[in-house]
Amino acid sequence: MSQTANSFSMELTANELALTAAAREKMLELFKQVEDDDLKAIRVFVSGGGCGGMGYGMTFTDTQTEYDCIRKEDGFDVYVDAVALNFLRGVEIDYVEKPTGASFVFNNAFAITGGSGTCGACGAAGGGCG
Image (cartoon, rainbow, N blue to C red; front, side, top):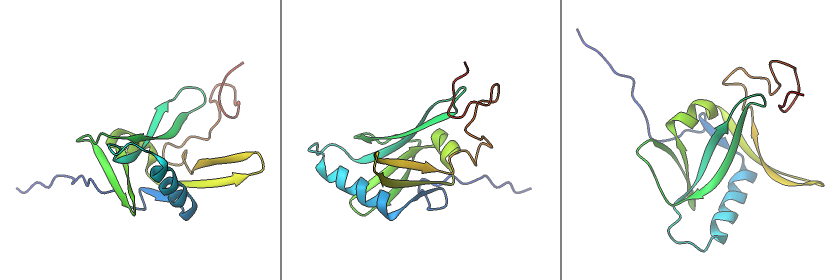
């Protein structure tokens, strides 16, 4: 009897984590502004949980772990660890500029986990009971 194991790819595809052109350009701009030659990539991460749902963010990193999936871009790499990827799969990262300020936006972040971005107990949008 032949058994086949699920293969784990270290390469992130656009279906797993999409970057809009605006996000890619801004990430490259920010990466070029950093004066630390040891930095290797931009790490996308997931934190927290609880009433308001998961938090999504990014930081510069100088460390690649054995659990990181990598998306190679022109001028920088993006790292996402395998656990965070379970919450990020299918997310599109965009960069938007509004009169109130500019920021990276994680689109479709709740689709994977079936969440709605509201508290399950009280229905408060954006989290926080009370």
